[in-house]
Length: 224
Image 1 (spheres, rainbow, N blue to C red):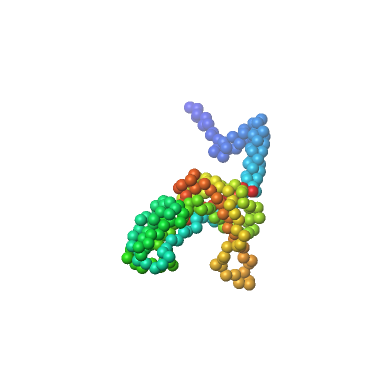
Image 2 (image 1 turned 45 degrees about the horizontal axis):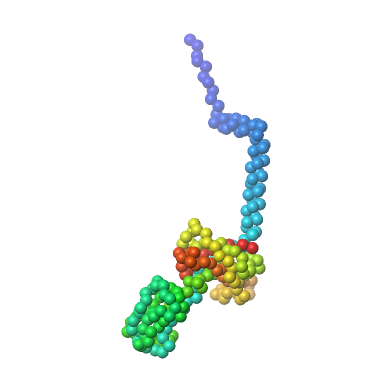
């Protein structure tokens, strides 16, 4: 009887080496490698250019000045004619205190009311709080050494908000703060030099982005 000859199968490692050897030996291997290297270099250069052409501001917030409305003289808070979230027009009646009606100084959105009818309120007690959407801005806080010198009014801005992380919004730099923000951090003599923050205010079309609300957190990129 003759024994059948067993076929030796190549080890797994040897198979991989064989494939790598064949790939490296392909006549187009060096061309493909060169193209990949060139594409990577081009992508890196474009990415570097993109980074160099923008100033990133991580800490930002959508905000508008709060308009507080109260009585000129003390009186009993009698009645409200609006609710939180209402859109109101200029001169619209908002509430009644001591027989006198309180009206809106401008068109805007009601963001809070002092819902305590029957109590006495004074001129120091805001009965209604509102904002004017046209005054809404994205305000970023930027350290003085992080590109502040490159930002001027009129530059284009792209910003994003945490509430809608997949959407991009656009605006323009409205102003750059002339005075540093007040810091709550107390530095001792041994601590490193404090890095001051300045406000960068960005104007955007509130009618185009009605979903944006006062107080939303944001981040933005200012194009140089």
